[in-house]
Length: 241
Image (tube, rainbow, N blue to C red):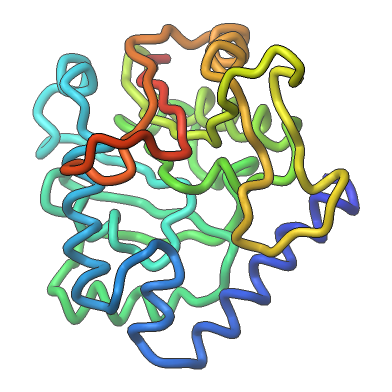
């Protein structure tokens, strides 16, 4: 990993550590646009059921109650909590060190089938072909470079069981013929840790996925909110290994 990429992840860790020492509402709201702790958990249920559990996923997954799932970049754990109701077991991986805060939330919510592991998604400390379903939401748009994204995709390919699905969201680069297929924003400007730093066209994202051996089941643009007919700032791809 380059110095630029290491610096980027270090910046995220420090920003999240600052939020950890503040109020519960401020920590959990940091990872999305929720108003407080309870609102954060409600939005987690909406986001997981609407943005993650696509029909195509269930076609290949089978009964989720017999499966495990992995979230890359779990943040405050709102999606982990939601996933725990659907899956037999759930694993979350993240770069930050605020695991105790997330573990307390899971315990408070009586969730006991979730495991947290430390690390970035470009190196997942799990066995080959050990996961039934992998998802990532509002994470990959914050990656520092295209190379890191490709590393993430290769690790997803390694740990995902054959013919099992994944649902991945990336930053949306809207069509503009003057632009490249992707833009690594942090390479040419100062940025805040929560800025979108990696944007891609959906077609370009699909080319990367296919090159790494995935089959594309569905692509699209997320809605800002499920109940609002307005495009969000992410493209998604539903894929199988």
